[in-house]
Image (cartoon, rainbow, N blue to C red):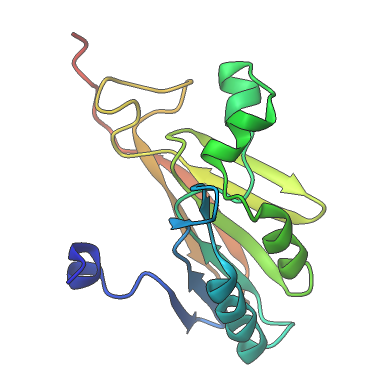
Length: 172
């Protein structure tokens, strides 16, 4: 049995909390080129999950490998497509096109170890930093060790904040 499934349950989930539809996805599905993706089977599952909640239901999607990120252009100064494909899912365009048909309020993503927020044509993509930040050696690109906390209000409103974990790495 997969160790993460044993302790955390299925990676792909869909549930309603306080009127908001939450979906978790596995973005570590490898495409034919060996890059991370959602994949066709999961894309169909995602569409079905979105349809079952209804197009008007506020939705939050969470996955590890980002759908959209500016890590390489901003942090590394590299704008080549080859870098983007290594740290974003390869089916970004298909996912974004699908999400436009629904009331997706947030896409929560990780992997980059930086906190970034991108608003792209009304859809918000939040990369959540990491508790280990720069692999336990302090901040990475000015992102402190931490995580994103999302709050669901009584009227289905969503707010979020980046929480500094509150410890300082010991520099070697």
